[in-house]
Image (cartoon, rainbow, N blue to C red; front, top):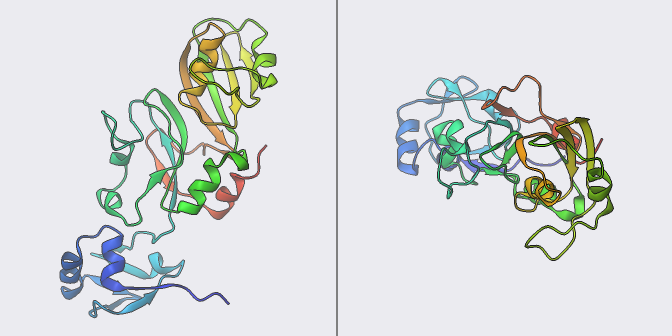
Amino acid sequence: MIKAPTARLDRLLANLGYGTRREVQGLIGAGRVLLDGKTLRDIGQRLPVTADLAQRMTVRGAPLDPPSPLTLIIHKPLGVVCSHREAGRSLYELLPDRWRARDPVLSTIGRLDADTSGLLLITDDGGLLHRVISPRNHVAKRYHVTLDRPLEGGEAALFAAGTLVLEGDTAPLAPARLEPLAATTAYLTITEGRYHQVRRMFAAVGNHVTGLHRDRMGGLDLPGDLTPGAFRISTESEIAALFAGK
């Protein structure tokens, strides 16, 4: 049986963003932290960080935030950016304020630009992040693409050939799958994540992307109950689906 890791109570709460060590010590001293209905007073008490801790502990009368590792599925809306360094409204502003102070930090698994919506994962699990973005794992990403002009008919064969070299690049793209849906709409599935790759692929064939939405990563579809801007904690089966392509 694997023994659960333990953490000091004050450090656990500080790492979850409830405040500085001094602030959470005051919170504990005020009797605002309960475990199984009993008030915790010892700031140095070591607690097993088990999967059910968020259901057993309350802080200020509310359930404890999920401890690390935490992975979220979010429906990224248009008009928000995925980096703290980019200008504009940040994706992280959609999360509870204290979640932005967690340690380890929450980071997006890959990025979608401000003009792209859809499925995005946010995690503090560095191992998972690297598994998903590693080229060795070939986690496919599917996009619903809306174009300015009708498809001409030869794009699917070109994208699948693995010979297309984008402007400014030296290496050809990995084969990609294009599934036309109508004259100006299609699904495009890629396994790489080059800068603005989908937009640049269509620019290379003389077209322009007017709408871009990611609806699938690996075998994980964007949940139908997530409206733009909404998020929830992922399940183990959803994480496994990332590595089971359809």
